[in-house]
Image (cartoon, helix red, strand yellow):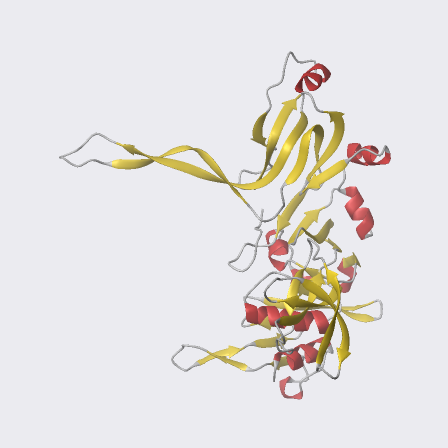
Length: 375
């Protein structure tokens, strides 16, 4: 049984008479380097859970019926290429939201115990069918099928957004240097479990889960609750508001350091590149020119999302028995760029800085195939 058929039977809740009429199906066998040559099924389902290559990776959970449809919770964490193909089958056949299972695991949420009642609101995923030029990487919308040439025609050029990813269609062979596929944009999902309101969405291509500080019943209300009151006031007044991750930057129309010093009642200011305050030392940094005064933050320049790593130098010690010894000595920190957030240019204008109102946040686990990391 191939992956498509296994996912179809799981999605349609077809019972297996050989397994006591339970929804238990196993796909094609995978062979490896074990003594017997057998490593298990490539894809299989056990009642309400669909697995890929073993119990370590869950593709989807069946939550029950909601709004007249079978509702599934799908895993958006990146894995191997073969698992990604199975994820494409799940996206096509299973109705429901897509979230980061690894982020919810760190948030201590048992997804197997969720039902459709826990999902308060979610938006449908968006798919755009495309053709990609293998050499230039340019995307074109998929046009009509041309029976004479035996291939699809090219339509308008498609500019990929920050959200989503391109999944090639393995069933369609490459023709004339073009690869057919779909650009999948994952929408948001609002979950209520154990008195906690959790918003899951994608920001610049990375999954995140935020725990809200107040109840919400819709995705729109959940996103609005993440904005501090000062940010909402600034938006109503028409001020320029920029965002990077959990930080909001509100424009002030002040570009001179002398003006900002007068506003803060300081003799002068000496801005330096610093990290915005972090809740924990393990979190990544948002670094730019920062001034902190009376618990207020001001920033300008370019905000870069970076990873903090300890820096060491080797200190040569006094020779012992004719041997020179050197030992690593901690000498500050070094900062490396991440791919979670693009650099945000504030320019010379000073901005008021506000953190969003979330109680905690987590992002998708970092693997060799993915970007991001659990904070």
